[in-house]
Image 1: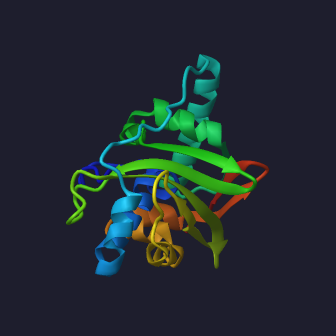
Image 2: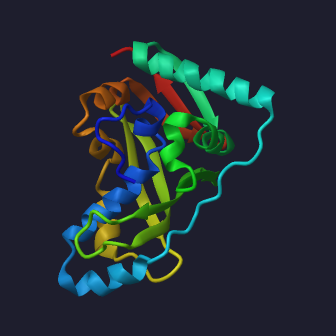
Length: 214
């Protein structure tokens, strides 16, 4: 799920719904894992891609309302306006199912907010990683979402896979990373948009995003 580097991404993709980036980080960590962990890494990946459920039919009225909210969110980020936006897990999944700019996540990522935790089910090909060509990471990622010093932070805190177990050395390294920093390291525009997020949290079963001029 690497995508084309030159393709313009929406801020929701870059900042918040970048499941591809979350799982890609796990793959990147694999490169530095000692040889003793290689068998465990192979056990944690599969030769088959497991499709992730895609949101079904949505009433036109609901879709229009959600599209208007998403457009307002994008405008706030693009133009540096202050605002507060809330997205339920259902709304996030509908956006992935219906928005053309998020089509690369369709069938590869689905989101859930359970007991105050943000969870991503994802399927990611690992073709770009030496020794893992033709394999997939089909897993569930539990993310810690917060704000530190006015800076949004997303850290994977738990990773589970259907078969095998993700080596703890990988999980430990993931917990030390801010996914948003990794995703925007080489994209100045994405970095600017993320810097305009002044608050990020889970509240009452929703992802709450505060934007502010910076």
